[in-house]
Image (cartoon, rainbow, N blue to C red; front, side):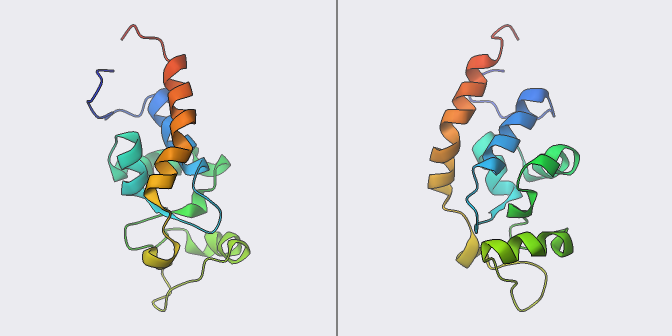
Length: 125
């Protein structure tokens, strides 16, 4: 990959990068698809596709749309209740202002794991 260019393909490294950022979202917090994507260098739709296909082993319930709405809210609710995330009055998700992860912290928390992954990637592309 050329440094500075966004990843646009769903390759193994991109998938792993998304999953590692999701793993770094703290309990009781959520991050939007686009926020995860901004850290990884991909768009929100690709994050959604990756989560749909490979996200079952990471805290998928902590990834929402930009409004805090969750596409699998009924399945996410038990996790949210355990972590103290409450549903906003419209019943579709949570308030990002209240439960959104601190993106600076999320970027810092995932940096080492992402750097480690880059170190493992062969440089012959």
